[in-house]
Image (spheres, protein in one colour):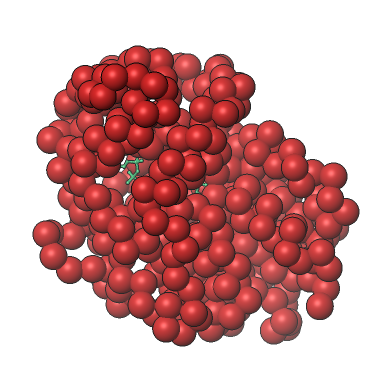
Length: 350
Ligand code: NAD
Ligand code: TDX
């Protein structure tokens, strides 16, 4: 079957894995990657697919109404996988409005364009890729299910919750065919080194302090990014319209335990003495409003669509470390310029 598929945010971390997978697996699809190339978007992430005949890139901002109208008119896309977003919680604390602009307004602009250009069509799909953070924070027990009430607590998660609500509202009010997935923390190659795992790898290589927020006891559920891309592929093709699917790794870690595991792997890979990397661990002021624990119950996508994670966490972390150590030029390019400014600012609030 032929499809014209618009992927937003395809130059970012998860988006680039999604684009790479779809380009390789579906040669009869036309895949259009739309990205504004913010500090987090990097076309180097897609060098290996850019010459593929079923791949195209368009440089555009999802908040730009006229540009989105043109993209839908010119490319006659029949499906959207929407990943473009501001994605880092710490940045949302420093600058909430940029999150409202891209994540809320940008999603509304895309929904409007889809609604206008898809009027009367049922063979179309708007797929919104979202986060488990919309559900709020858990205590020591329990899991987020698709029925957990929304309770976002950071500007980032509030903006993602708003965009989820808009997607559902366009489904209920206008009959737009939609599907949503809410995923836990991803890790893997090509992740911008402001998020926990690549930041720690970067700092260990450079023998810089490893900033652990608060007491390091917050818990996250980690998923290999390629397993998330596989889940997105399945939800896109088999998900029921109007439904939400939770995606998670069944893999909870306290931050401090994860950082110690990473330190042990790094000591081995860098042939440093055992304990060398862990000596860099520095407890710093906690993140404002820091959610205590996230944990996903992914049984719906498992039972209904047959997806489950493929990779053990230790194996995935090893592969991630190997990728970063083998690609110092990627880290060098992406951490120059605007990132350097941010890195400075980030340390001011601690
Ligand atoms: P990322 O920050 O690495 O990439 C975001 C991409 O969106 C970048 O390529 C950026 O250039 C692009 N973008 C930003 N603003 C834009 C705009 N106004 N117009 C067009 N493009 C724009 O993010 P990520 O970690 O790959 O996350 C992708 C999506 O998945 C986001 O919607 C995020 O909320 C969601 N998500 C992320 C995680 C995670 O652990 N990283 C987990 C669950 C859900
Ligand atoms: O330097 C750090 N020190 C630290 O202790 C950083 C960057 C983070 N942390 C802690 C905060 C969190 O408890 O590590 C945990 C993970 O932090 P992040 O990597 O910033 O991820 P998180 O805030 O959990 O959000 C991520 O998962 C859900 C993504 O950034 C979101 O886009 C996604 O929706």
